[in-house]
Length: 244
Image (cartoon, helix red, strand yellow):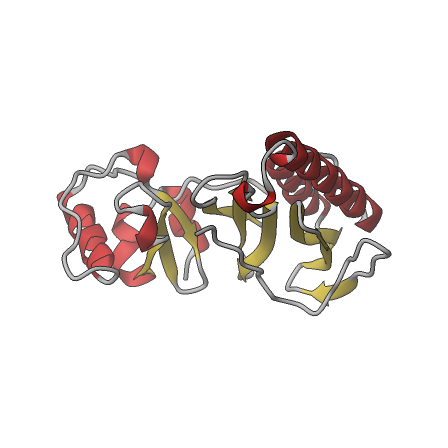
């Protein structure tokens, strides 16, 4: 069964017939929350973007550039979000028709769907963390979700590498302890650097493993947080400067 979900945060709606955006004040930047939604029997599109609109120019430019990279598009305003959403919807609908128009109605699967959510997840005076979640369904038994966080230093807008030496046995034990919070028995497999997706919350370092990385699809996302007091020795010097 495919997974359909909607992430609800701020009360801002960008519909097919129009758009609106509300400013949300943060510690250093002003954010416009932009949303687009459209669906029919062939396609479903849902977009949610916390767009950095004003503030420290270096930081705002860095965040805007990263959002455009994630969406592979040039987003500068609510109108751009609407145009991007319309384009996604039309593409998904065309793909659905190509796949199912010649099939009997009872053999057709549900609407193809695409969800993008890019939100301001955590913020302090020194850093800001954006969280990206995307869901794709283009036929088959189920769709696929990818989640990842990105932490940026406010002083210069640089995306910071957080972990230093990932081969530390002490760090491995902390990770296994975190994994065991999601399962009765933690994974014993050795984690590679590429599998360590991490970002800063306001209280610690969050680890996230996407579907199939260390568990079956049915287990969903595997995530846990290690408090600053425990993770500090394993952080890069740049990351250590950001935390309390």
